Amino acid sequence: MRTADRAALVLATWFGCGLAPKAPGTFGSLGAVPLHAALCLVHPGLHAALVVFVSALGTWASHRASLVWNEKDPQRVVIDEVAGVLIAMGAVRGTGLWPAVLAFALFRLFDITKPGPIRRAERLPPVGFGIMADDLVAGVVAGALARIAVFIAG
Image (tube, rainbow, N blue to C red; front, side, top):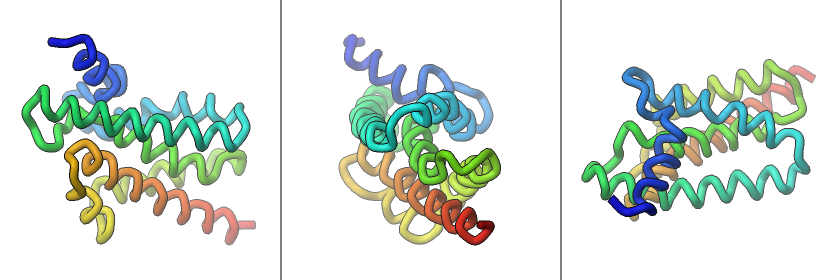
């Protein structure tokens, strides 16, 4: 196996979180929480840029993992959950713990149930982009709803 493929598998599984025998997507999402906490310490613009970088890197890594494992959307690939939860929680950064927990929970709900446009995004080509796209959309929707909840709660 090539070095690039090994690197892609490490990133795609988010350093092994995706290898959990049960609920790998939840473990991948939880594995993103420390990165979210670290990103909250930097300027919001840098935070956003790093989430875009993780998303781009995730597109490459998930595509490579899909080819290596010869699976269209391997459950072990969780970098998509990492990017999605970073988007959702980033939308409410600095607003407290309950909005972050709400954003996380909404993201997991939308990632699991895949309503409407989230399911459609999953089918976008190429494979790596489709793997990432549904979670990116779920992250945006979850973040927006959590942000609205913060606004309503005052």
